[in-house]
Length: 247
Image 1 (cartoon, helix red, strand yellow):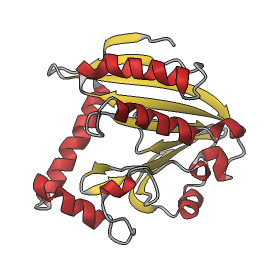
Image 2 (cartoon, one colour; image 1 turned 90 degrees about the vertical axis):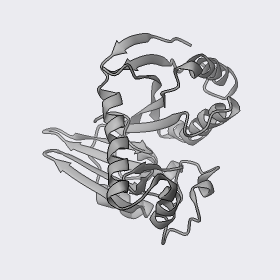
Image 3 (tube, helix red, strand yellow; image 1 turned 180 degrees about the vertical axis):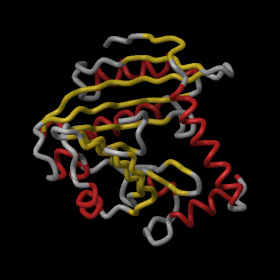
Image 4 (cartoon, one colour; image 1 turned 60 degrees about the vertical axis):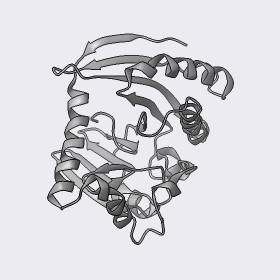
């Protein structure tokens, strides 16, 4: 397993994530919601979904049918998959590296995936670490993605880390702009946010049968689908719980 280090790289990612947190707090305050009341906001976000609380997401998995090749909505034969582990706790970096090394040897990753390491910093001296790996899969290999993602979650738990310590992202992309509405209808997702900027359209939502969500304002999101229309073809990125970076 190989690790490449990129020290003091652009801190736009941290700014983006920080802005999301700031907006979340401002929206919550604007709604009269204190941090102590966030559990109530979460409960309200779950109304009508049949989910009783965020703990109910423990053990939830990504369904193969929700992945792009398995959705039946694309003619592409292969997809690119990226796994991202992000944390602001710099001190746990070595533990994560050791955990990933053990994962490659013992959890069916076949040692074929190389993890890269980025150390991010901004102008205020705040730092974060991003570990990421990418692979190309066909339809049969795509079936192993839910297990691989679960293995990552298990590895983090075995290190004694919580969801507050580490965020795990999964992104899958194909070279085709799929029908967003068709995907949404098929997966029965609760719409939370829509955005459109020229040729790029992005939908974010809440899947009551999906992974543990993240907050954006007072809303919970655990799936994001983004497409870009090009002169020839297009591109689609499916992300859990949200995109780590842009399309």
